[in-house]
Length: 461
Image: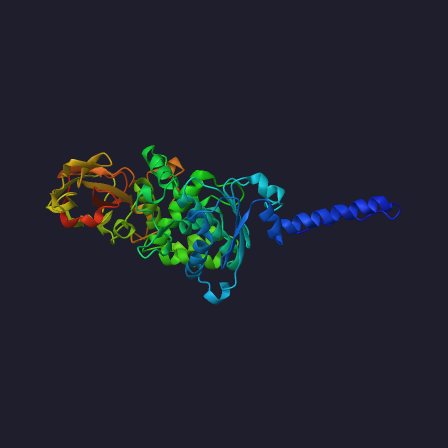
């Protein structure tokens, strides 16, 4: 924070000059307290403890206990992981230091003059390059998460020169704030939560699941519109994290997402992002619509990643395809011409789950297993979705698709959020020239239990 210049004193008034000098000194002192040296003795006298670390010096008014006192070590363990993720050489951040404030009583820190002058009423956390502030949280996990979230901001500002627009800035901070302890006790950042118990009080997945249940998931372009001109809000944090997690964990987009760090300080970030995705924009739109509707704890990105195949004309009266039971949506490659009705028949036996008590496999046919249901349909039932050819470039590779906000364009977007049940056989109608996608019904976290294939035949009705 820059120190404000005091107005020049009038030569005719020594009293006025003294007052101006006093104001200048007061302003400079406040600025120093807010962004310069910290009076450790004064902090201690106010009941604020200092917890030293290699990269973080943390001041807190919370009483001593392991979950609090470990935080500098947590921060130190995160630094090399941030460096690796953002392409920063370890030597460049070896001497990086941050002062942090973990706050129970805001008034105490305000009286000490160490609250951020530009945003003193922050809700949970705030960060600069060399300083961060955290409000005490209701769980040990969420407290660590918030420290890592704000630490990610500070690291990006320090070494990338910026943090991009709101969706990227907050999504990335949430991504690296999500963490877990490995079996050897080491901290691991960028961990997709396996269960609600693993991330107590965090709540991001619940927000996404509630939105999906209400058919109110955010379209991709709505997330990309989050910028730095206004507060993102709790929902914005959740959807920003969801997009960052998809891009970072998806084999088709991971490398391009990581390279965005190189342009975090550049203008027109979203344009650069679209250019990086390039011809795969249609694929990303499809992935997002399916993912937003089904995201849940333990999401298996590798198996849920869509399988795209080169489209082939439905030239003959019949076409065939094979679908794996251990994958998410898979293209058959079959293009169904607009206006036609098509009879889809399925056959085969596959494994859809393992018995929780015995470990024995559950055999299944395309009609599904009615002993257990998922998303309102029998487990293992064959499902279908149509991807309009307008979302592909040249009939082979995708191009940028509309966000879905325009009613005139909604029919040209794939609707993986509302699949059509096929089971052993069903008839579907193609409103526009579309590629047929299929999958068996199962939770995104449980595909690893499955094996086998479904044989599918498509006949013009």
